[in-house]
Image (cartoon, rainbow, N blue to C red; front, side, top):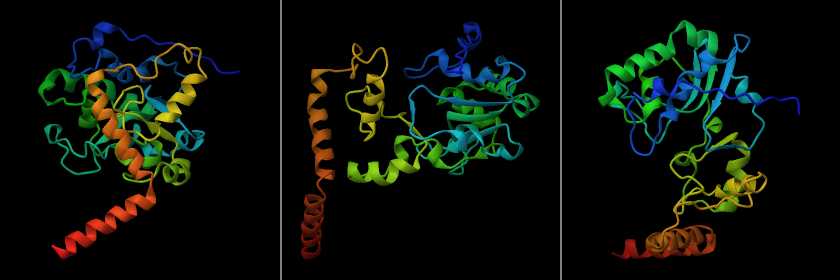
Length: 253
């Protein structure tokens, strides 16, 4: 009850000139300007994408040391590398959906200015909008945080029963990031979609907002296949039996 919500509105003309791909809008570039817009009394800023749900208190995240770096982030194990911007080593490209920002260091290093300059000079190198620009200007100059602070879909163990994910994987995470598989999309594979629905019901929009916003009859066959696979994974005895049968068949052949 002692918290305040403050809305910051970057100049749209500043972002409309940057390259946009797929369904992204100019809003993806807002985070480049936030460290320059908050009051001078704010020295540390935690940026979170809107498709994120916190499942644990964030004190540990906010207290990450950063070791003098302007940004703390989690390596993106889905993208991996991005040779177009000079990143060829796995683990050196970060996901910009969760950023812990040391504002004085950010300003000293002119991160905003360098990112804008890169976007203007090399639009043909940009594949993941602001994320590519930030990675380009912060190569090997960012603090690597543990993956639990940004659990994107590619970090979730595959072919593991939901009950195991809920009991063993989820308790160790801090932030579930629904990038790649949004819970409001019909064909989302994320096993934690239920968290989104739970939180949605607690909001003023929960009773009137559609849970799925892209329903199409043409997607029903794919949806059925997806649900069948999920059901199979959640039947450990059936899965074990099938693997045994496949092993026998393979050995005999």
